[in-house]
Amino acid sequence: MTPILIGHRGEPDTWPENSLAGFEAVLAAGARYIETDVQLTRDGIPVLSHDPSLLRVTGQDVMVTTSRYADISNIPAGYEERFGNKYHDYRLARLQQFAELLQQWPAARAFIEFKDASLIAHGHPRVIDTVMDILRPVVGQCIMISFDYEALQYLRSHYQTPVGWVLPEWNDDNRSRAMTLAPEYLFCNRKRLPPDNQPLWQGPWRWAVYTVNDPADARAFLQRGIQLLETNVIRQMLTEPGLEADSHGE
Image (tube, rainbow, N blue to C red; front, top):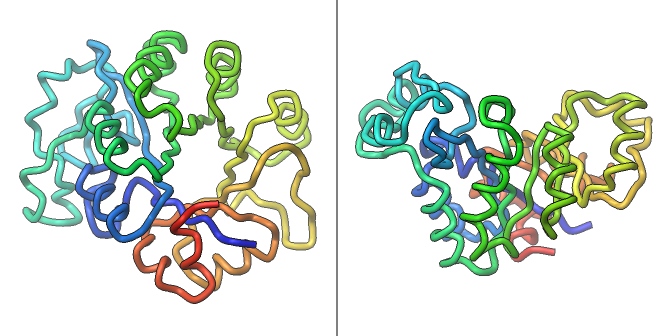
């Protein structure tokens, strides 16, 4: 099985997570799959942020969903706690900028996660429709993912785009829900997977697991039939024997 490595939020061990520079660097290094997170500001601007608050990346406990984009656009987002002043000139990236970056890398594919905080604050239609409108020029390069099952149902009924469900728990109810939704991808936290001697659910999906930063772990997941591996250190993983083949896709 050929591995497919996914740059989890770019490469957050080297650049501030979800930064345009981080994504560009891993794509230039040969990565062909990346993953990012989308939140919606109060005035409806999609930005790349995993957390509802900007505390980790900016040092300021500012909530994205209750802030206007103009009020957060000039806050340094260089993750000073981790990187000091090295990236002091970085700012929170807009989804529009991310889409423009993807256009420069037509062979790249991006998993884009709708975050619960924004879906709750703004409602599914507003968040999803806003994001999909911006992604229209690159929608063929995108796979939309979420923990939120209703968000994926909305996507299924309104858009022709592949989706991935990020499993909140490993249980029989979610297995039944997965069969009903039939997503193209199922994402699972490595800690939620069943023991190695138990089989993975079979269905129309492909399995993806996060977060995998050790080559030996990556090879073990491949042996279990999990082809897609999210990693924080994708440039390093791309140089490992048996893992480098993923960079050119499926």
